[in-house]
Length: 610
Image 1 (cartoon, rainbow, N blue to C red):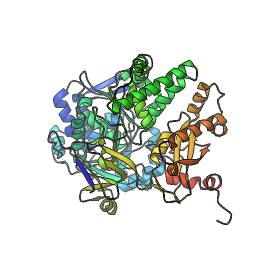
Image 2 (image 1 turned 180 degrees about the horizontal axis):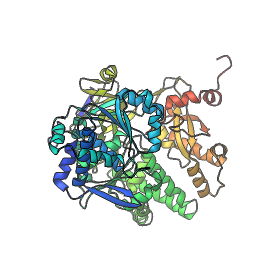
Image 3 (image 1 turned 30 degrees about the vertical axis):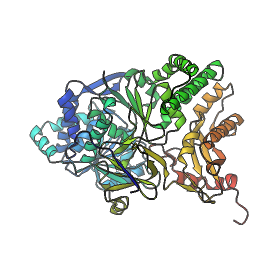
Image 4 (image 1 turned 180 degrees about the vertical axis):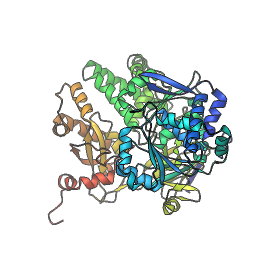
């Protein structure tokens, strides 16, 4: 390695324990205090730590009664909800493997995952998901039954059934099973979202989760042991390893974990649950910023918001440079803090101290805006292969533009070709049914991430691009598309931006629009709304806004790396049409192939005969 940096552990971590130990440790500290909160009939209800442990134990006993053995795979096909968390811990506590399946996966995707992991049973959220599984059940030889979580047509759910079955299993029998499962046992197989090909199953062990939950807690003590209590509202899908990790981070500390999955009510949920920190992808923060900007409009209120946004960024940049604003700007900042910034903080419930951002590059202007408003976006980085987070910015001394410091006990390295590599207890056991890929990606203990980056003198990690997504133009210029794409997507009308140009004479972009956001923005500009995406793509006001977003993005790169042409696509990139992953990442190769004719005829005009 050309560079290495290890963050030492402040307190030894025992990684040989079962995942259940994360919950039992919480029970030993705060048995009668709220642990899991969930919404039903528009009211928040809760489980104490001891109540949730008894629930998990009862479900695990029910699984034992049904004959579930260590090493057998059990699927969960559901949105985020308390049953997901309870079933997950119950399954893993007795040595079986949880296989998360996104509720948006197609029947054929469910079939592929089930066959690859030899799933024995699947917990489906509702009748719709059950029907999806049963449509392919004849093609999954190992799948014995599909159990429905919801009480749709029955008085009792599968939760009630398992609890009843488990009554014939003694505590001693259950504890003996728990005690037989150690750190090196595989706890779960998590399938990647597949942005660069067929999803691969990644084997994560009990050690991965136990060690990294405790490492995360020790790395971010002031978030999870906040004076007055810490609260996290988790709304990302638990099928994603980042959200799943955060449930263990919360349970292993003193955080009250709120679970929600309805994005239509997320603002109301923030305001009623009142989280003290939040976890989200950059797109959420971009949409909050755009909504605030559009609400202000283009009149006096719009000018006030624009000035407030500029002042917030100035404050943040001064803070990052360890400088102070001028007296005049300090007066403006104090005024905007009362009049504008407090309203934005109220969107998140008014109690949020920090937000953790991950999953995609965070544009620096968004980071500086929220930092100035009073909500530091602590950017982090990780992979499914590292049990989600591998590094994150600290709450004190964070550096905007970096993805932070390694979590305690982890080592980051920079290889000779600039690739970031990771070593430590976070690294997965390997790729399920793909020993050749395991040998290719993990050697001498180092996980080769495929990302390019650097480490500064203080140990902060910086991403500079992705090896596989690096665009090399016909002129030989290497271009990392992420910084351009994340910048363009700040525009209030843009939904997705995909930069292209590999082996082409210049860099270009394919842009899609968000119809609702576009109409909200047009209204704020005093312009007439559009009826569909095709009309939006031809609207000169919208085109001018996209052009401005492209120009702003180009200011961050050299002329050779800049976007020279763009095309607005009058369609959406979605999971359904195969152009987005379940974690909402654009599938560049799929998109370029799908729009090959448009690219060749409208962007790169081919000469006749070539």
